[in-house]
Image (tube, rainbow, N blue to C red; front, side):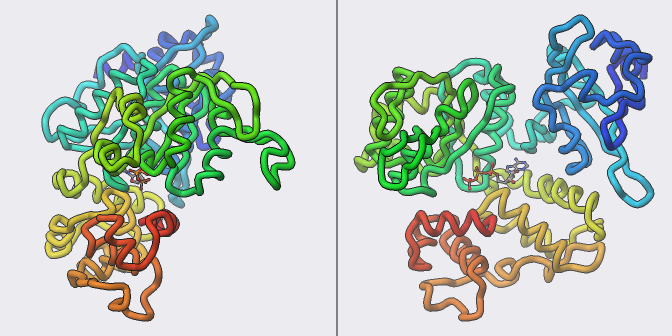
Length: 426
Ligand SMILES: Nc1ncnc2c1ncn2[C@@H]1O[C@H](COP(=O)(O)OP(=O)(O)OP(=O)(O)O)[C@@H](O)[C@H]1O
């Protein structure tokens, strides 16, 4: 208890007005309670890039998020912020209580994040899995460097969240984080999107267009599905990595940029190099620090944890509450192959909330593929009335997450299949 009294504790209402400011907060940031009570937190401690309150309202809590706050003497203090929301009688977000710890202090007692099988929360990623916890540690270690990071993992394993975590943990956190999917655009559009173009570079280029590399200056650029980057653009990316310069489409002089690249792939780049589709020199440049995210089926202990997490989130906001999971439904969920990983699990919970009516999550509240194992040899075998999203879901389940095979089953190109999957959140 004495320790809690020493911690910096702050309470805010839904608008961000400061309701409570204890002695610990006075010591940490230098402002007296008289100076801050009743004022807007954004005008006093001016959190850098602080969307923390939005997250608390949405998620009900945040754990150990790194933020930068103003100190009374000028300058800033980097703190780790944990918060719990409180709600009014109608269930509306009414404010939050926060605990702030200086960045250098060890984690809160009682949250022993290193112990095996204990859940660890890291920038929105939750896990009990030791391989994923190791990945978090690598992220913490390399975040402050400018080393290029290559994240490998199946779709829905949290690659984009990891890239964001790297950005948030790095000195670039107050600069932009931008992401692009290299599989979603044609080569020429992708080139223009990445590097920009000058007026008159091609028909329709009526004015200069700033590319992502320029817009992200000082920050982090996340290149998802990097294995799909066309060969001609690979040379251009290599140049950015080696010389920190690029030439916009149609331009005639190089532009210098300071950008950290984080790339991700669900394929082995080594295999792509062997097949002649990816430049070996670029692979080495990109995978200075490789981070592997295991699929959900390889970390079964996370299934229950994530189910609970997503159910809690819905319980907090929606009209319906789920208090327990029927044993048969739980068995099916634990046995599932999870080709779409955490994203798929998130969607299954959403489906169950939309379809079910009781406080118990039952087998019949799960999507159809959980009730009968799908056998899907060809697109022709699909029931005519099935929606496109259901077709994609079934194809993915049948192909055990193999994107190429699933796309082939539905007679789609990889890129089209990918786009549709993203559209339906599968
Ligand atoms: N460990 C985790 N804990 C909580 N949520 C997670 C976790 N991993 C992923 N998610 C959630 O799952 C969804 C998919 O994550 P994300 O977009 O980062 O995956 P991805 O690997 O980048 O997928 P894709 O390759 O298909 O773009 C997001 O809503 C994310 O918040």
